[in-house]
Each structure stands twice: as C-alpha cells, then as structure tokens.
Image (tube, rainbow, N blue to C red; front, top):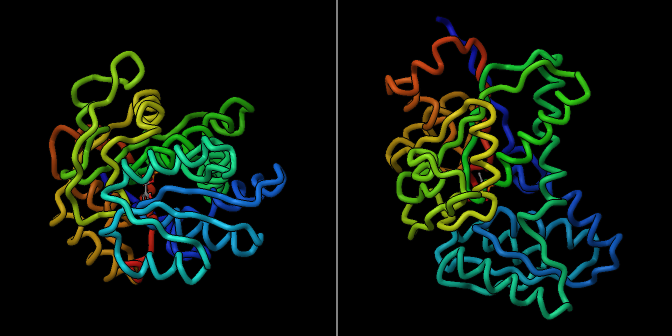
Amino acid sequence: MNKEIWFKNETTNPTGSFKDRGSSVEITKALELGATRLVCATTGNMGASVAAYSARAKLSVKIFIPSDTPRHKLMQISVHGAKIIKTKDYTTASASAERLAKTGYYYLAGDYPYRGEGQKSIGFEIADQFHFKLPDAIVMPIGNGTLMWAVYKALHELSIVGLIQRIPKLIGVQAAGCAPIVHAFEAGIDGIHEPIKPVKPRTIASAIEVGNPIDGPKALTAINRTGGFALAVSDREILAARNLLGREGIYAESGGAAATAGLIAAMKNPKFAKQLNEAKEIVVLVTGHGLKG
Ligand SMILES: Cc1ncc(COP(=O)(O)O)c(C=O)c1O
C-alpha cells in the first residue's frame, strides 16, 4: 500500500528543538510560583531551552550535563548565561539536579509534569494539521519518555472530548546502545508492575542517551494503549537517516533523526512491517537541529 510520510520539523523552534514547547510552560510556571533560581539536568537540548527561556525571564539557572555533550550545546547554554556543571553521564546529572532541588532553594526544571503540558502542543498541532482525521501512526525518539507521554496525553484528551475518534499507533525509537524501553517492551515489562532495567548508554545520539528513563513507564503505557511498538536502531542507521533527511532539506542532529531511522528499519522488518501494512499516513517527528552537533 502506498504511504504518505509526513515529517514534523521541530528543528525550527527558538532554540532548535521541541524542548521549547515545554520550557515555555515550565518557565512561566516557575515565575508564577515565585522561583528565582532553577536547576536542571539535561543531555543538551533541555538545558539550552531552559537557559534561553530563563534568560528572558531573568531567572538564574544551574545546568547539570554529561561532560561528553556536543560543544555547540554547551556553548548555547553558556551564551544564555546558565552555570554549567559537568557530570559523568545523564543519570548522575539527573540525581545531582534532584538533590540540589531538595535543598528548597531551587526550582527543579526538566522532564516533569508542567513540561509535559507544553509538549502536548505537538499532539494538538498534529490533530489540527490533519483536520482532526489523524494519521495512522506517529513515530518519535525516546529518551526519558516525556515526549511520548505528552503526545499521547494530548491525543487522549482530544478523544475524551470527542474531537478525534481514534489515537494513532505511537511508535518509539531508541538507539541500540541505549534502549531500556525497547528491552522492556520486548520483554513485556510495563515499568509499573515490574521496573524497567537501566542500561549503561553508548550511542552517538547523545540527545537520547538516557540509561534510566524517568517517564519510561508512561511511554510504555502510551505505546501499549495505542497498539504501537518500540524498536532500536543502530548508530549507522541513525546517520543514514540524518543524511536522508538532509536530502529533503531538513538538517537534524542524530537524536533528532532517530525516529526516521526507526521508521525505515520498521518497514524493512517483517515483525513491524505487518503492523504498518494498513497505515496510509505516518507522521515522523524530527526533534532537534543538526547545527547542535
Ligand atoms: C533531539 C531530541 N529528541 C528526542 C528526545 C527525547 O525526548 P524525551 O526525553 O522526552 O523522551 C530528546 C531529549 O532530550 C532530544 O533532545
């Protein structure tokens, strides 16, 4: 069956990734709650976005970030005036930010509920752009799983009020070197009754290099409830997808091209291709700009 594949280009947001959708709500909320200092853990894009929106709001920010983060992201964060503290990996960054927030002097920014509320706008926009006759599947990369849950929550809310009749299959893509959610999905683990096993990440797709995803159970819920699936792609497949997007005029970072790689891999794999057979329209999220490294 012929398919229409749509790319939702999130690289053109103010700081070059979809994270701005969440930061807009989250930083507004921090201001409303009277916060003056923020702390945030990041693989890069979140930090750049939180730093930019906080600069605009005149809030001071500390960013915990893995030391091997691409230098353009570090530069972006420091140009916006945030203080950078380098850590061994994202799991350590996340624990450090949470520890500092517990002192009571810092507002904890990151993959928490207010951000998800902002990221829901991706789901609302897809519904709007498809005139409420939704595509058959939406493919996206997974790091912490917050994006996946936000898209699901938006579509679920639209279905509750009767604006859409069905929710597309949600398909999550991780790098093979960092795929705790894919492993859980394959093992039938939902992350609620049995925990997702953390992994030691190793991939070029640093934006999604999250070994212990905080919203993993929610992402698995979104995938399972919509009849979707999760799959892993190699770094080589991610780079090939990035080049393919480039030939279409979209410059994505590797993590931003992971969903495209995932769709290509799924269509070649009989296990997944069968599930996509009937799909006429598929949306792929391209989540971060290539100039970020
Ligand atoms: C470019 C890019 N794509 C995808 C993701 C994954 O989003 P989430 O962590 O919400 O699953 C991130 C997270 O940092 C990202 O920066």
